[in-house]
Amino acid sequence: MMRAGIAAAATLAFGTFTQTSVAQPGWPERPVRIIVPYAAGQGADVLTRLLAQELQKSLGQSFVIDNKAGAGGNIGAAAAAKAAPDGYTFLLGTNATNAANEFLFASLGFNPATDLQGVGMIGLLPMVISASSPEFGTNDVAGLVASARARPRTLNVGLPSTTAQVVFAQFAKDAQAPLFAVNYKASAQSMADVLGGRIPLVIDTVTASRAHIASGKLHALGITSLQSSEMLPGVKPVSEQGVPGFDVVAWDALFAPRGTPPDIIRKLSEHMQRAIQQAEMRRRMMDIGVEPKYMSASELDAFVRSERQKWGATIQAAGIRSE
Image (tube, rainbow, N blue to C red; front, top):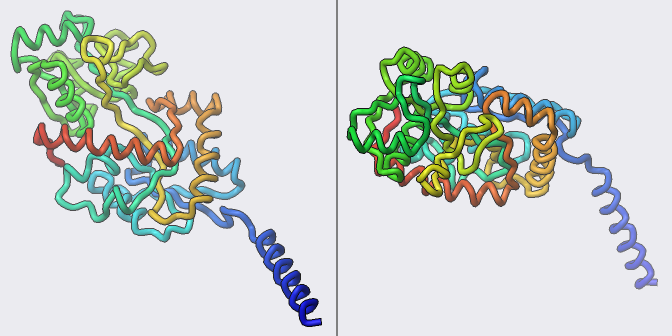
């Protein structure tokens, strides 16, 4: 009788456990917040809203965008890093917030290496090295390098962002091209000067450059991604023009507070992959200058570790500082 009672109790307990497990609703049970550490309307914000729309459709729950701009993205990133790791707060992280800023700022308010973990890569944002056309007279990177060596530190290059400064520093080093950096606060200013003939060269995003390249006002010498891009067909990578291995691009990815349950990370990452693979989503991403590029959570974490080393080394060697 005692053995029968124990067996019955065990069966009842197992049955209760099984019923409870099945009855628990799956994530997400309520709206999910994605912190964007930049202002509404900027490229990262537009991209996140596109992704959120697709995730909302596939997961059946609202994804709310929370813009927390300031300090080069550090304010929003710190808020995400300090959020509860319960699967209801995520960060749209970038090469700035998760790779470069710790080398640019005295204090971030968080540790990107220990406080955040990857969910999935969304896309890459290659830069373009362009020349005023036709005044500059060089059609490729090899010609640019030859011109720079013939006239050391006399060819001015407009740099409208920290990312452009890093691209410039790495290019000048790898190509042994003694160019002269001219820093600007925004693309509008550097574009106005290169289009007006006041500077011969500019390094900027595909979004900022594409229309001027199409109109013939700028000539694209090379794209900074390792491979060519559908966004600028016919423009060769710098890596294929005498600077082998050159690959410096901006990027956007989704991160979670460290400690977020692995099953939630996995589920969200899988839905991100499906969204990014959709033809319409890919088209809309490329329209805003983002090359679709999915990476899983583990692939993203490994990529970010490598990027931190690369960006950190270039920033420190070139003495680049935040403004």
